[in-house]
Amino acid sequence: MKADRHTPPGGTVRDWLDHRASGDRTAFVFTDDNAPLSWPDLVAAARHIALALTAAGTRRGESVAILHPNGRAGVLAFFGAVYGGFRATMINLAAGNDAIAYALEHCEARVALVHDSVAGVFEATRPAHMTRFQVPETSPDAELHAVSPGDHALLMYTSGTTGRPKGVVHTQSSLLAGGWTATVAHDLSPADRGFCVLPICHINGLCVSLMGALVSGGSVAMCPKFSASRFWEQVAETGATWFSVVPTIISHLLHSETLPDDGTRTRLRFARSASSALAPDVQTAFEERFGVPVIETMGLTETAAQILSNPLPPAERRIGSPGIAWGNDVSVLTPQMAECAPGEEGEIVVRGPSVMLEYLKNPEATSQTFYGDWLRTGDLGRRDADGYLFVTGRLKELIIKGGENIAPREIDEALYSHGDVIEAAAFARPCKTYGERVEAAVRVRDGSGLSDGELIRICIEKLGRFKAPERIHFLSELPKGPSGKIQRLRLADLI
Image (cartoon, rainbow, N blue to C red):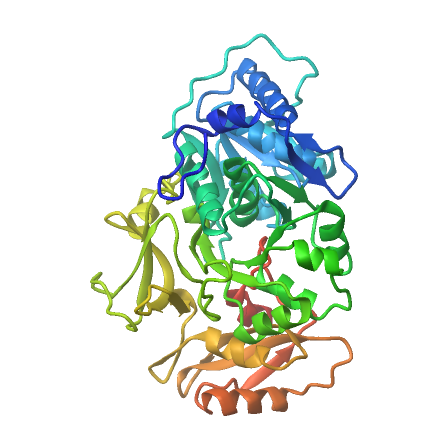
């Protein structure tokens, strides 16, 4: 089995795991001193977990809750559940007890695979019918469920910044397609090793890193969590050839004192940025300082991660754009659902093999999210004549001042143009005169003497007085979701 550039992978995750088990290549290495996993060892352990769940009466397609931080046990729990034909339900451990309790109740799982470090959280949030599953040391006598490409394979809950989180359902097929889009866009091969610092309870860490390695035949170096002071050392020690992060991590690395050694710079093919827009000034400064090209991309939980990516060097990367479509069809539509002309702003939509099946037990939300085969992303953007997409904002995040739409992203980028700014986000406040006014929150480097007046002047110079924020709030840290994406909609209430 091999990933073809033009054809989505066929079969199931079990098929691909069994295929990888035929060799003796390394699948995972870990920075926390856990023993590495070869593909044969990983598959044997996954099959053992799958058999144990089957023997315990877990039904085909039933949810199995997984509460694990990044690490060896978490990788095995995920692959074991999917291998067995169950719906791996990845629980975001950073979401807070209320959100965890909601997900555990909503998914209707009867059993959970729980890491010892979060056993207390599980006991505090589990519904009465759910038990912690202990995998026996010896494999029980059981016959695995049959698995087909259209079966449920993954359930992942959205961040839920407005209302209850929605449970995104991916099939065996769309989960594999998520790994395939990363593989073909980044030309991943068995020689590649990705460095994973993003949580695998988030779609980026799970599909780009784990599923990307499964489809490409490469390997993953996994870190429990991001550390700016140890990042380059860990990349060097693990022999990674690429890494996937989010813009806030790129900004923190840019402001750290550590640098990659010459061997690491030479070995790294690229850095991948996703989950939210990367400010052009930050990307340019990162590449100039570290000598590593940044590939900006775009993806959603609903699309098993990546839908857009810039090409690899030496092909043209357009800074400020998450690139062109890979593996899926991507378009820009007007409010009347007609295709926009090049340069015209509209809503970005996507259709293709990695698009979700549905929101679990929520047909109304599913119906509202689809227009025919097109999944509506909620992102506003435009496409140029060469097919590169430029994201201009989120429908839910637009600031409407005096009847004029203002995209917070352009204010963010103006703020990031100052070298002391590590994190920035503009947001709306109610205003009696204009309906809404513009404010912003920033985190600056330690010891910075930057003032709000200086930042407001920068915004006025770049954007004009109407779009410039009226106030700048200096915070020690901006609120973020599990992937590291700044949660703009929480800022007004927080401040």
